[in-house]
Length: 344
Image 1 (cartoon, rainbow, N blue to C red):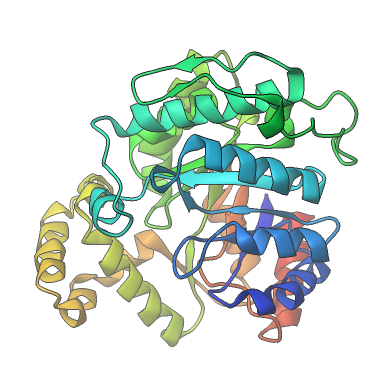
Image 2 (image 1 turned 45 degrees about the horizontal axis):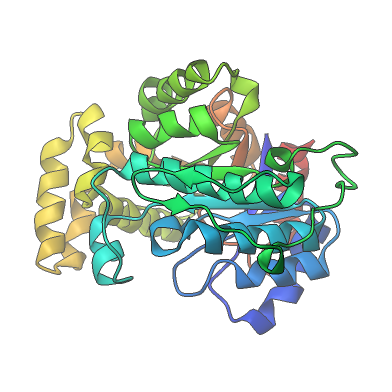
């Protein structure tokens, strides 16, 4: 089990120092998000100021971009980092795609994301192997690639060795809450970003079986895919209050209701959605009981956190990124100890 770090929402000028500190502490990867900033730009600086640590997007909003944009950006980052970049994609929800990005919402979420992944890999195959670019699907018709617009092939990765395929050189992870995207990850991708609004029971009963269905469809095995989780952790009353607030926010999202339904809390999810639609955010955390919080958040002590993370996620997750972003200078010794305990 690897311990990764989440980049806090900072300006680009602050990225080099954070990246250096994260690698020195021993994190396996540093993940960027598409919240207040572009998720790709920090990766150029992470790659420049580190030499061993992976970096990737967790996530970049795929439906806000064309597959060509994604293919070119990932190609450049993989080349710059010598194979340390991971392309993490997520679909977001309909309201954000239509009203925040001004892009159309597809009739089939899994269908469009499937084609995006296939088109991205078609570009990569053309650039690396000279294969004719000829993708024709429901959402995309991509058939034009002239030499002027074709980047050079990627060199062998120093970490992965000679003969590295593009799929190993640029892994694709996709994120999801429900079974459709988990199944798609098992079928097509190198990794799955489980949503932070999750529980071990939901992973074991819903998500992992869906990933396994996808793996079987493509003739692959469980060790062919990496499951990455971002758990809520609370070691202080303040962290517990923050986790309760975030769980209430996520539980109010209608498309995430199946997580609550599994535990018998669908009625609470509907109430939370009602509060959210009225903008009554302050009322929502009070609906999250201690029982609910314990399902979605690991409540422990700093001393016991490493052991409790292993017990809670053993056999479920291959990579962990605590929901709390890494900030250099805050608990560095503790982060280092946690990294050593989980990455050893």
